[in-house]
Length: 139
Image (cartoon, rainbow, N blue to C red; front, side, top):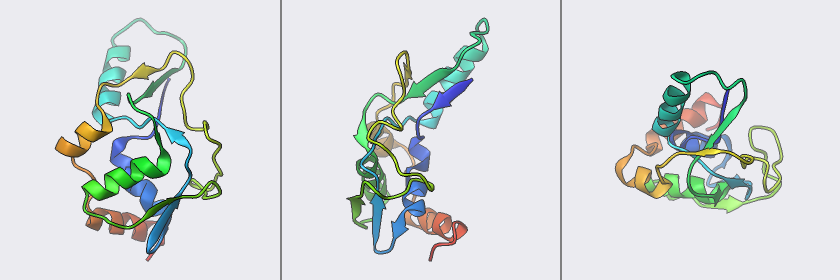
């Protein structure tokens, strides 16, 4: 079993789930987001080894507060909405503690940094963010 932290690719959708137009309010909980490609490489590596019979956690190399990581992704996609820290903002219905989303000991770390992925990757565009808001019942 692989347990992953939030993917870079979903940061825009996290914003869509927390959109309170014209602002986005998100928890200041710590996160270590990871590139989907890094998760795929780790999964392929584990799938070709002897079974571990345990859970492997994977995470990105850098820690951010959730609202900061989402703001970086939105800015890279041209979305200038304010992203504000709110310790009581629900994360898909749950209130987070500071370390709720941080992996435990022995985590495997993907090599891709969020700043590098944003520079060369495909951050979610404003149009895709709007589409994800509509699919979540948001204007």
